[in-house]
Length: 107
Ligand SMILES: [Zn+2]
Image (cartoon, rainbow, N blue to C red):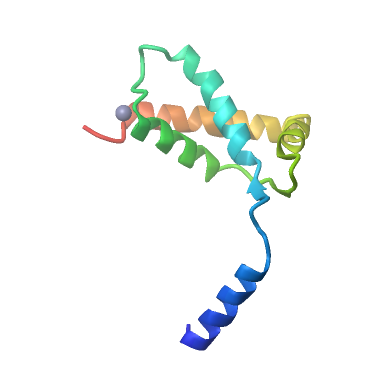
């Protein structure tokens, strides 16, 4: 990208407030991860590297759920009423936990 184009893009980004744009899937995955990890207590590494890797892996395997709103939490709860979406979150979290359990993020 040429310098001119870059500055135009940066000006565009600076001209708008994208702070309230967020992927609600992140909250849903983190909540589900917390729930599922309780079952594994003592049987799995819960260091920050492993748990953050589980979250990243699960998030890469679920459909993003972007919203632009102050009411993010309400929208997130709504998304879980969609059984198919809720199942996809639960399964992605389960698969990520199992993958990291078998291959921890460190020796
Ligand atoms: Zn670990």
